[in-house]
Each structure stands twice: as C-alpha cells, then as structure tokens.
Image 1 (spheres, rainbow, N blue to C red):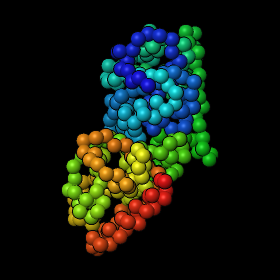
Image 2 (image 1 turned 30 degrees about the horizontal axis):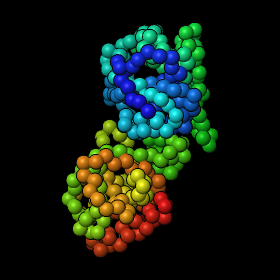
Image 3 (image 1 turned 180 degrees about the vertical axis):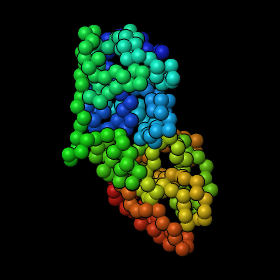
Image 4 (image 1 turned 60 degrees about the vertical axis):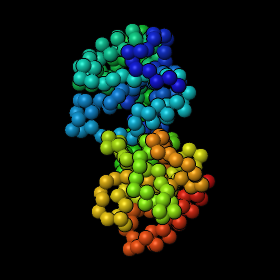
Length: 288
C-alpha cells in the first residue's frame, strides 16, 4: 500500500474513506470497507485545534498505515493538519480536497463525521453534493456498547488488552525503535529489547504482558522496574522467547495478547527471576 502526502497525490477516480481512524477499530473498518483510498489527518486535529483536550492516541501514523494496509486499500493519503487547514471551510474541503485533488467518485464516512472550520460541515453537506456518491456508516456496536476510540483507550489504560482486541479487530500494538538499556535483563538471563513509550500515545497499564513480536512470543514488562530502585522513567522491556540477535536501532512491533499480572516489587533478585520464568512459560502458552 502506498502512503502519500496530499500534496503529492495524482488526480484519478477514487473511492475514498475519510476519517482520523485512530486505532482502525471495527467501526473504522466498516467505514473503510469497499474503499480503495483512505484519507486521514496528521497530527490528530485536536492537537492543533484543542491541544489542551487532545487525547493520547492508540496508533502512530506508521501503525495506522500498517493496519490500513491489511484491509485491501491501495493508498493512504495523509493531510498535514495545521492551522491553515483547520480554517478551511467545509465547502473548500469538498471542492479542493475530495473533488479536485482526489477525484472522489464515492465518499465513505461515519455518521458522526464533521469537517471544515469549527467542524461545521457534516454528512448532510456531503450527501447534497452530486459529484460523488456518499456512504454514511452508522456507529458500530459490540455487546450493546458503541465502539469508539475513546472506549478502547480506556481499556488499554486499564490493561485490558484482550477486551480492546475484540473491538479493535486486532491486537493492540506498539511500534518503536529499540534503545539501549542498563543490560540488567541480560545479567538475569532474560535480555530485553527496550522501547521508550511515545508520550503522545496511550500505553497499557503497568504490568507484564504476553505479546507477539514478529515470529516470536515476547514476555513484556511495561512500567518503571520497582525492584531496582526509584527510577520512574517508563520503559517497555520485551524478552523475545527463543530469539538470538541484536535489535538495537531497529523498529520493533509488539502486539499485546494478554495481561499476565501487575508490576511487582520483589524482595530479592532470586524471587524476581523465578517469577520471570513463570511469565515466560505463560507467554509461550498464550502466544504459541
């Protein structure tokens, strides 16, 4: 799948799904269904319009692109969202972006989609335009509850990655460069690949998780390592089971399968190592 800034898009007939699509959850997937192009915004509009209320996001642009690519979409078009774009009228968005730039013949949105200056445009304005066909998708429910990115953020923040996965349509994932650490895990017999959490993104509640890292199961600690003093710097430490090699500087994607336990402070290193062995075996069973 091609990821293209709006300025580089070549005009052609397109079936366009429009939205922020944070998390690319089941509701988003219904909006995207049947489209060959997804149009999204970077950064999230709230970061520009209401920075004091901007949420921590479920997905970076890179992860969003990975997820959209699994849906049979040909192209992800990215609008750089800034103050200039935020002041564009709804009609300008339709005329200049959807029609002139993208050549939209079909436009698919959720029924709560708003656009243009002060979010003054809505689905009725899209439906009134005869130059393209508009498909409006109702909010999707699961177990009687409306699926939303904010609901999924709450689940992730609470550590309930299983419940989040059911309404995301895939496991929650974090992707980032592997950084050097204090090599304490190597000394304990469990060398870890470490990722520093992006402060703009939601992270799971502190604890130990069974994850998937490519072809490997990974026992992952999210937190501040309370057994080793009072360093409160958050870190994501992944022990890739049956992996040998050096991942420093490489991008690592972790898919969170299940939460095993909360983060604990142990009285001694021996107790910690014994628990880590249990965590690794539980991870192996869950992710096999």
